[in-house]
Amino acid sequence: QVHLQESGPGLVEPSATLSLTCTVSGVSFSSNSYYWDWIRQPPGKGLEWLGSIYYSGDTYYNPSLRSRVTISIDTSKNQFSLNLSSVTAADTAMYYCARDRAVTGRVIDYWGQGTLVTVSS
Amino acid sequence: QTVVTQEPSFSVSPGGTVTLTCGLSSGSVSTTYYPTWYQQTPGQAPRTLIYNANTRSSGVPDRFSGSILGNKAALTITGAQADDESDYYCVLYMGRGIWVFGGGTKLTVL
Figure: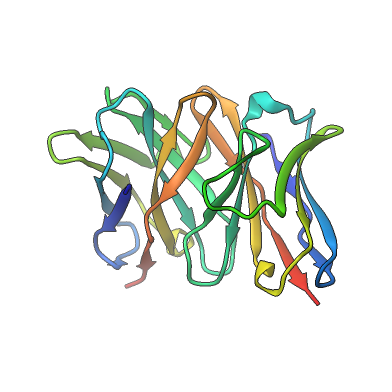
């Protein structure tokens, strides 16, 4: 069974860098069939796609956040990570990692349970 | 920047049929956007319902169906049940690795 699990600090200070890791199991992490995505959801609001990474290290970012987002991958650990720099209270959200399958079409299909990150001093 | 549009809210009676839509601020939605629909209940991660516009995800009841209606993607719930009361999100693939979510529809069953 595909399983994704987010981990990282639940509290980040304003202007600091938010760093999260997603650990993946139950699937061939380095398969050329998958991208690995980060998505967030502020409290009471909708979903926002942040970006994705391919096993090769190719990255794709939300244009509105491109200057602050970095996604990296460690295939030896079945992990990928999110860095979001210069955070403000507006970055307070539930952060999800997800699998993005590119076989006979395209779909973000499996999601982690999410981790709540609060930006506050 | 392209905006993906959804009805903010919708209401359906138990046993009734409702169609939620997913459009673009400019242009028409087609299968090349690989429309995906999610259901989200409070405190839970989104659940994948429909992908590639009309393919039902494993375990999803057949009362949920997806289609392209005119210039929008559509999610139809036939025979709505009380536990269908949720937030529903669509997402579209814009190409070049970019996805854009709609703002979501809050569905009430009453």
